[in-house]
Length: 172
Image (cartoon, rainbow, N blue to C red; front, side, top):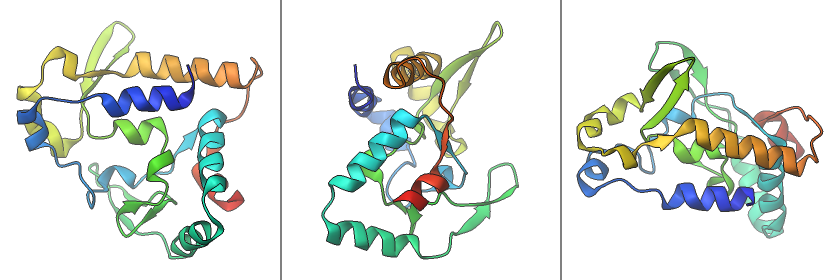
């Protein structure tokens, strides 16, 4: 499996029509994009490869967008934060190559901490919880395990530092 295969599987993940109708996730909703993220190098490499595959004109157009100052907003927890370095006018400039964490935003996700299982979802999408079935909830632990294994394979079992998206953008 490659990281692109994992991304494809997540992209194919759908929820039922009632839950989907209640979702606030759409172009223009960028509440989850006000965060400073780091990613595994396998994902950083994917973003870089995608960007380098674009025409020079498209690369320059995206770089022009990146020159704009970052927006800031209050998080759901009342903390003032800046937007992701790839966000421009509330839209992702690397949408096609966005990392796994960005691909799962807004979806219901279950994960375990010690022996306790939790369910997480964007506060804007809480209404859809009543409409979801068990198979419409992503297993975050499984996704993270697969992604970490993809990183290990890509790194040939050498431990690599995570890459801050702000550092990646500076290289592009």
